[in-house]
Length: 307
Image (tube, rainbow, N blue to C red; front, side, top):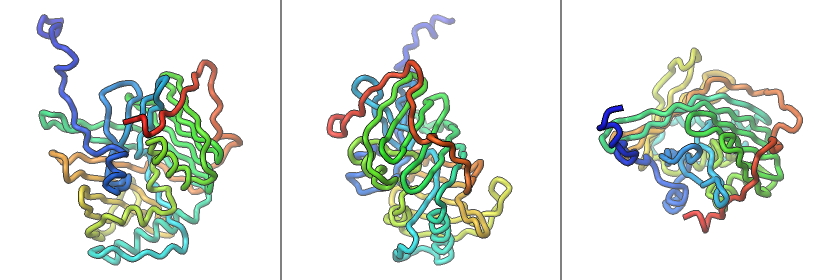
């Protein structure tokens, strides 16, 4: 090692800018998860979170990546006005996707996610992370994210919500409401925890995603992962976002991209659907967390103390 390398301190390393606001700042502005991609923490191994960290030691429970998967499930029969400036063709495809997802009682997905970080020197760094999620409506889901920054699982079994970090063998469990929608709201508002794909598995997904949309375009048919998809592009106040929806009678999302309009370098967060299964095999007890040997229970820090 050279003398110059020996003198170099950790603080000399390029620092990154968090591309989006925290969960608390998002709520203050009335934004949804789509509007804020997670910050990437420089504190390893598990400080990371769509956006949003929550410490996981004796005082804190760290949060899982907010954008692990990307499936919408707008409630059947919910009629909402089409936002001004949105192409009717784009709106038709997007509504068809949310209606289709709402009709699925169970589904699972495997995704590959990419999060871009802009350094103070203006260089864009890309972090890749695989993720999985299995949903059983109305009251169960499990999500996992494994990469070099975090190895975390999120369990909800209709009674309790658990965040488990394999790297440190810490877990936090709290009593939860009886439905996925209510639990997502509880985790966000009380714990400052944003569940993976929360805005997109919420039954109010269409309304939440469209509330800040200024315009939307139907681009056309394209091939994504070997499948023909409708390409839709939307513009909101702070982000542009695109979604590719599978053509045919199974209109599930195949790809999703969010681009910041307020951070220099326009960093992106993207989700590529690797595998979608509308009828997964659900094992008995798969949504219930069972602490492994040697795991340590800790507590979620209440939101009022996490600032």
